[in-house]
Image 1 (cartoon, rainbow, N blue to C red):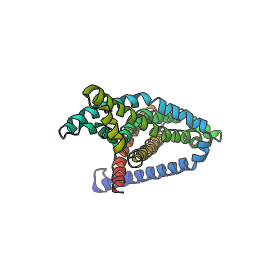
Image 2: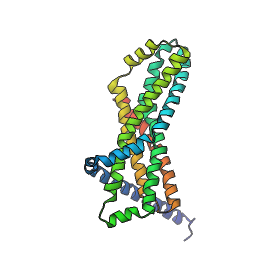
Image 3: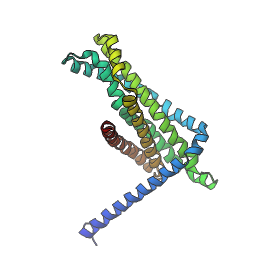
Image 4: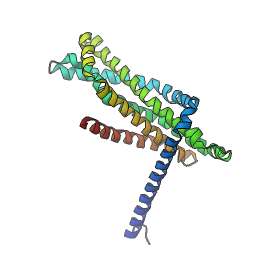
Length: 264
């Protein structure tokens, strides 16, 4: 039977669908294992703390610099837009809401996927290629419990902290542009922000988003590294898939979360 015959195409399609379903099933099983091992992983908090430092501290520079420049851009664009309607004093509110609701969690998650997610995938993939995970299994040590679970929780904890840093630095960037450079009244800038930003509805929604994005990006990175082919090419492909899959998942989940939050 020719591969390009109708039956051959149907066979290839069926094989691709079956492979994707098998991958989804394995991913769900891995996720359930990570959730089930949450207690033992958090009990040995030293391992989680090291991963928070590795994932969070090493990503802090790019997060802070990106947040500063995003705040600069929001300050400029927001001022020229609000000036048309005589509402330039509301620039602080515009910058704060844009960051804590949307840009802070989303941009941080995308940067986190590119910096920390790729590092996780490459680390796990190289451990698999070097047969370190197999050696741990030979010594009756569960690699999911010892290697993956602490990294999973390290990413979950680090992500909201990084998003908070991004939003705070971005607000300072908007203040520098709006108050120091353009000359908006500082009292109006901060008072409009203080009166217009709701702690639970605005900041709370941003925290929920950053938590969900942290779970998503960290799990995608660990899953791709754990399933990578134990070759240099396999690790490089897994690293690329981490960025692509995590970024698309973050953008898709952002739409779903925003729609559900504003409908409540």
